[in-house]
Length: 214
Image (tube, rainbow, N blue to C red; front, side):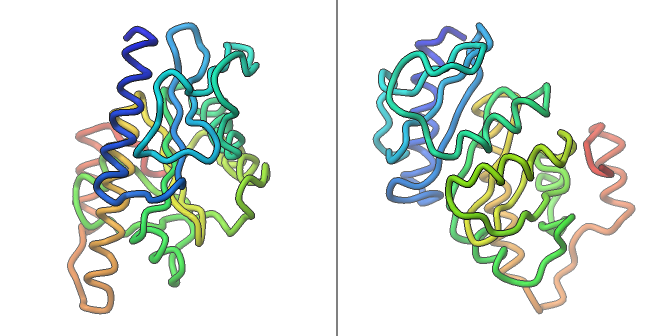
């Protein structure tokens, strides 16, 4: 994909997330790898509903900011995923309501989302719940690095999810699945809902060669 097309795609998908209420105001950030190994990143303080393809922050393959507006203050999160996951071609961070609400309740830190549907398992693997950090704190990136590339998705407590994917479309699809699964978990909480059992999960892991046991 040309850089021009990637810029357009990144802004189009971000607007779709915004228009459907998956993030709001000037929250959230998104980035993608360019063909030359650089990055395109949403600027700080911008709305997903109004990103300008020509003003995206541009980084070269050495990590130097070489064009566009000042990038998001959450760059440490993005670079941590790119540096530790060789398959990462895009990273998305949202402030999506249901996943944030679920992070405020008691949850398994190593397995934040219950395996309720096949697609939650297939698109996300196990989601790591990280503690609360102040926005922009580089320690968030260090926490992701501490996972050594073993997770494609994390949940920042009281803040929002962060997901890496092979490209922008895959990352957006996965983070939408995270929010949908969190919504299902809240809707059925305390109702004795039947999720996938261990055998069903392992069948998915085997059939689709998923990252699950890390």
